[in-house]
Image 1: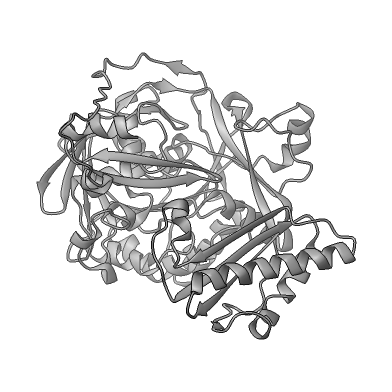
Image 2: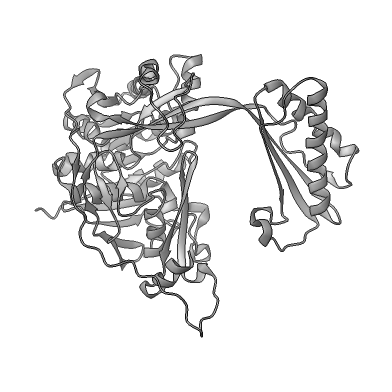
Length: 519
């Protein structure tokens, strides 16, 4: 095994992240690979709607615009780029980037990964009786997008074929980092522990500065929010790696900030399912080995599944949200009454026009600790009234949108700040998730327009997990004192579409049994 280390930096955690991150990493990150994560479940539906309006759209144009000024330096430094900016149109993204590069006189080889978009197969999948994997509801009549989360092997194949830049559609977020590691170190499809560690490296950087102190529980310890350092992983051939960030920037890389990001969106840390490997991160160790440097080891791979997760999106009615400020004595009570008046007035108009009732109504008086429910305790003279509604009929919500402003002269004193004017009526986008056999999901790779052979492992393999310490739970004794959870633990919440999860990490091992008992 060589002593070589590969440095990978992530410049985007979502579609809309700062374009300034590219320059930070390219100019002083000393990285080998620059990777980007643009896609979320709803993002795919937005891109699909854009493609429906124009066949040349459907990708993240921000990627092309932000990367263009740095192409020359990236090429000169020998860096390679991997991005899932292709959305539902990877070839369109490739063509746009190739045009920009050609106009600048920069010769780059661009690869694309295809096969994730299953929307053309919707009728067959519906006819097969496919149901949603969590709720069991039937396949929707009309879908906007339908994409499988592909793995890292196709990315590695494009790099093997000489691509300088690889553009994918939907893939596992961490795959944009795992693909380069498989290519550079020659990891096989059954190098389970290495694949798990490589996936963890990608997972820690996929959300950009969220892994370097952003959203950290101990926010007061994090310097430089105005210039947060982008994450970099320094990976060894055996899969162990050091998590760090761009030098001379803000942020904080410590076991707590890294550990929080490790728990982000993974569900069961003993069985995080990814396309390339089933990850067991329950015994991962995080050791501070220098300023803003954390050594990460111990991830295990437990085989792979024989299926891809597929996320489809579809329209399900209409929604509108209104927010307005109220500054007054007894603001919470007045705010609640204003909201009730708006909803009651709309319902009366609906009945008069033979329209059905709202499907959903959500009223939050923000500033009155509405999010805390029965535990709310603050009294305030200033609140934001937030009203969210859904309906099957767009016309009904147009009525709702038109009844917000009149409240300013017919209800409580102190109403102001009608944010963004009249609420915009928009479609409700629902997520429909299911599993699709890998063997029935062809994947293709092109480099500079030429087909590249790729073989994706499809046979499921399930390995027994290593013996783990018993999950101890300890009830507090008679001399116990009540403390805040934040004093004992770090935490990170995340979501996959409409499914949220919360991960809790004990600040000290001794705290864990008590935390487990309390939660």
